[in-house]
Length: 400
Image (cartoon, helix red, strand yellow):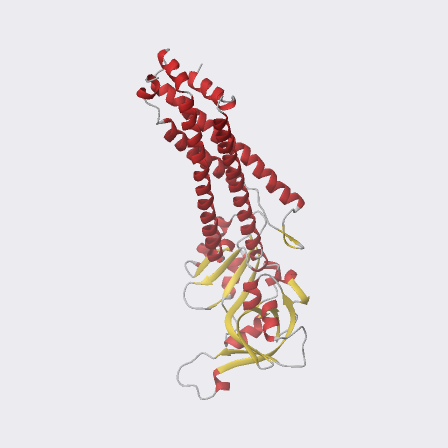
């Protein structure tokens, strides 16, 4: 039988004759439970926020996007089209053109991004499902704008009363002889308004590919990018290899996460910052554990002297309090983890906390968060227990 473990369990679960020690032990254990529950809840909350933020990218970003390594555009030939068709894991592809433009309506102007798309674009993405007013593109010289742009310029859907004009600077060199000669422009009609998130709503308008080609002075086969929709069970790595074999190093290939790299980095940085802050809270809570163990050591000096005289060496006596502190933190951490899990589960099922009347605070239950909390509590608890038990020496147990 492990004597140290047996005594440690007795000390942990039995009451001390000193009420102050009992109160300190309860406070220390409660601190661990609350801190571990809070850490799990916060990690689950940030995981939910990350999923919520990236969820909208699935409506506008393709599975894979091909952009030219050099320049802003490239020629997409019939040979290139056949090469894409030969890759079986590609379900659909769409040709797109993207550029900065100036929108003018009723004397108001705004910089925006125009994205010209072909008929396949709504098969590659689900942008048409995010149109909250009006309808998706059906003809040339039409646009679908973001909610923010529509509000800023004060135009609605199918507003024929006033002209909506799109300007794009003409490519070329030399001095500009007239403002009119410096820009390509068209008059367009807004047929729909989409609402996704603040950034996209304030920055993007969509048009037909032919409209964008006219504004950019592009040739028939000249485009900015190719966006791909993969089959359901496609292997992304295999598709990337096939694209590299077909096109060499002509294109940069990015998946949805890589297209949202800045957002991912920001969310991961925030998640790490919050984790470190709550780890500091756990460290502060563990000072209570150290204090409770030291008080227990002083209270049990007579018992420790008896154990020493019975032949239990100092290292085994140290191990008693090391195991007691470790058990307290691990069991408290597990209990806190269970409480945190139940709170997150209730939020997920019953939407207890709401961001808006119709939007519950997003949470996500991920196995990795269980591991993070348990490892954090265990490692810090072991260090705290080691620190407290190191106060025991031969003079302490033999001098009574």
